Length: 236
Image (cartoon, rainbow, N blue to C red; front, top):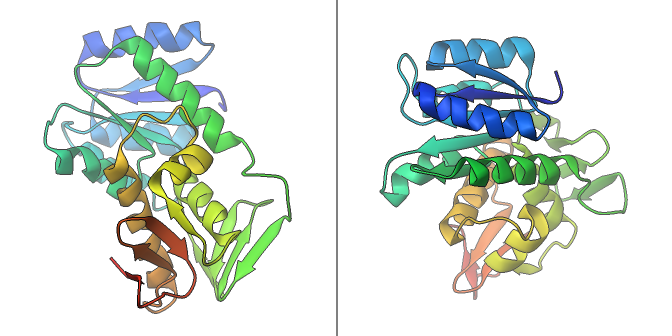
């Protein structure tokens, strides 16, 4: 069911509106009104993308996203009615690829679905099928990452981010450059969204390497992959 989209949302009016727009764009739509069923359906059907409400009965959206990321890299768009920035970023920190704040336009959400599917399906760039630096190996062909002999599970967005940075070790990428080249120019997030994805990627690489740091913050500029320059940067 490679063209299907799963909506996990307990408000039937929201589900119906989003369903209409996704059907118009050619998607088969699956639905669940609680986190337990949403997680089960996602695992059983392996949809192309999951739209996941943050506040759900049974399991909340953060718990569902965390569970999905244990065995799946399906793109996830989180829906949140919370207004605090940290709440909106909580889904990204456990593996969501984008978020939309309620109330939202169904047209906007359908556009986000199209954008996320496009940027997670497109190849990063033409070039070698495998990239290596230090103990990190990225296979663009198989969309896999290893640190030493340990596999590392990344979200599609994290994979694109690592693929961008490992091509040019030592280069400092600004947030705008990351948005343009790894996320796509249609990305409508903000700087803290980039920070959340970088932070999650950094934690995963460090966990697999025994806390070796691969991605460093250059304060006031952006991020770089490779050895830290103590005069300009330090881990965040």
